[in-house]
Length: 133
Image (cartoon, rainbow, N blue to C red; front, side):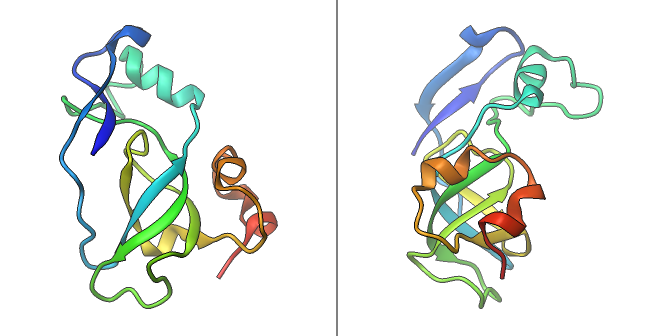
């Protein structure tokens, strides 16, 4: 898959679009094809190394916390989601074509909106507006 990979701390120039291994959904997890993510203040602070004492990047690593997309596969034990569901969440490593998300933190969109619009809402405080299971 293509992903924005970081090999060292620094400015925007350390963000590189590269091939990166595809993740796989494990027990209780869902593999999501990313339609949208967002850039948050924590992302540029992490990239710059300002959070390395408490929220480091394991190089080479990915960044990003917000995601909207479509379910590709579900891991063992996941019953609330299936392939094709349109979903959003806070997750990890969302600057990529594919992202694994804990099913417990995933929500299905309940209205007919573009996933790009849904992906721009940071955090879980929008779940009552956007949808909930």
